[in-house]
Image 1: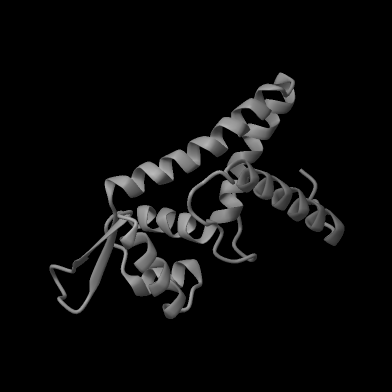
Image 2: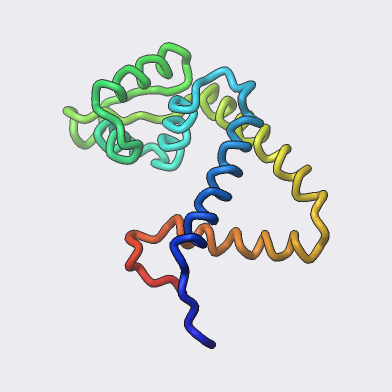
Length: 152
């Protein structure tokens, strides 16, 4: 198989296409009660699966500790997260989703999924198959540590 070279223009076009889809998905969920930063933080807490600490969340979300503290206060005041001391290290705090937080996050995802499902249903079968296969490659790209990381 010949080696393909990705031109700067092709990379830029793909980036713009991905950003346009991302913006559209956010638009479809604009009826959410929470701002995007809070929803993003809820998803990060969920991914941590009970192991989230404020410092780990700040790193993962690229937030200053003061900004994170404000977001956590708002989420806790809204009953969307629970904070508890770490059973192994009393100096640490663990953050997890409350049931209400899980429901808010699920409703947010369902709004975006519903739009995407309807949009995908309008594609011809060959294009749908191609797009779904490309989704696997996009997931691999998103998981790559560095641009130098080689994907299969």
